[in-house]
Image 1 (tube, rainbow, N blue to C red):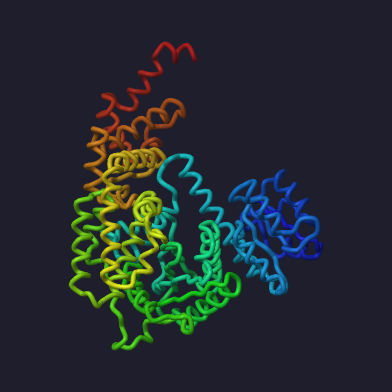
Image 2: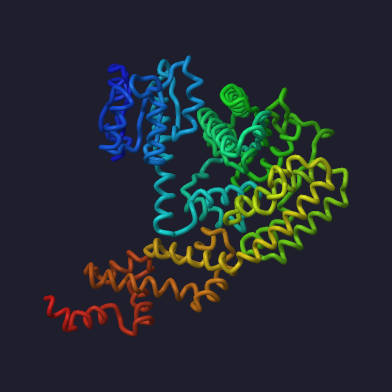
Length: 541
C-alpha cells in the first residue's frame, strides 16, 4: 500500500480529506496527520510516506519549507500535493520548483479534484519507481530518455512500422487506444531570462513547463513533451473524433498562457494542428502545428491551423524526407551518413535563400532529434557550440538562411567528430544494455524484432552489432540465458519441466526440452537426475 500523510493546522480539513475518498480502492493507506510542518517532517522521516497532502500556510514550518526540506534531504519521494487559498496563489510559483505534483484550492476541493490530483501523484511515483528500477538494474538508460525518443519518433513519423510503435508504447506503458489525436507546438518566451544565470534559467523554464503540463492536463488528457528548454509539443487525445473539442483545447492553452505569465512573467505562443484518427498520423497534425506557430505572437498567442489562409501558409521543413539516413546516423553513430545527409540539407537550403523560416524550422527539428535520440545529446551539443554565447540555442537568433547554414555546418562537423570518438564506447554500451534488458526479462518471450523495437534500433543492425561484439548470435545468446535460468528453476525451486517451460516463455514443454537438450546435451529430466545423484547432493539429503 502507498502511504499518505495529511498535513493541515485545521482539524476539520484533516478529517474532510481523510473521509472524502475510499483510499483503499486507490491502493493508499493514510498513515497519519500532522498540524504543522515540523511535526510532519518528523513523521515523514519515521513513516516514509510516498505522498504528502499539505497546506501551504501553517505555524512553525509551512508547507513550502516542508516540501523543500524533503526534496533536499530525501530526493524525489515523497511527492507533494499542496492546498492553497486564492490569495496564496503566488506561493504556488515557489511550490512548483519542488516535487509538487499539483495544487488544490481549498474552497473548491471535492472528491473529483482530489482523486485527479492523487492519481497524478501515483503516476509520478510510478515514473520514479520505473526509472529507479532501470537505474539499479542497469537494464537500459533512464526511462525518460526512451520516453523522449518515443515521442520524437511519433512526432516526426520515424517509426519503421506499426509493430515497432506498438511494442515501444507497450514497453513504456503508454496508452494509444483513443481514436482522435491533435498535436500542438509551443514556445516559451522570456524578456528577462538572458539576465539570469544558467541555474535560474533552468528553474524558470522547467517550472513553466510543469505548470503548462498541469493546466493542460486539467482540461483534457494529453502528453506534454519537452523538445528543448524553450520548446515543447502537446498531444491531446479524445476517445473518438466526435468527442474532439477544439474549443476546449484553445481554452486550455489560453489559460496556460495567462497563468504562466502571471506566475513566471514569461509568455507562450502555441500552434495547433488538425485532428487525426490514428496515432501514426500525429506527425501530420504536428507539421500543421509548427506552421501555425509561425503566425502566433504576443497579442495572438494561440493559433489553430484551421485559421490560416492559403496565402499565409508558411510551409515547414518536412524532416521525414530524410527519415532513413538520419535514423541510421543517430542509431548507428554512422558519421559518413550523417555528414552526407546534413550536407544535402544545407545544399537544399542554399538553393532556396529566401525561405528563412523553413531553414530555421528544419534546423530546429534536427536539433530536437539530436537532443532526444543521442546519448548525452545535450552535453554533446553544448560542447560543440561552446564558442557561441547562447550555445546550441543560438539557432533561434540566426537571422538569415546563410547564418542557419553556418550553424548547421558547425552542428554537422562537431557532431561527426564527437560520434567518431564515442562510437566504440557507444556500441559496447548498447550491447551491455541489451544484455541487461534480456536478463531482466528472461521470463518473457524475447525476439530480435521486439528487443530492437524497444531500443529503437533496426533488427539487422542490432543482430550484426551483437554478434560482432559478443561473438555469439542474438538468438543463441537468449537461448543460453534461458537454459541457465531453467537449470536454477529445476534444481533450486523444484519446478516441473512444463512449469519451467511456461515460466520462461517457451511455446511448449516439448520445444523447451528440445532446446535444453541442444544446449546441455541431455534432457531436463536427465539433467535433474544426474544432479540429484551427485555425491554433494546425496550428502545434503
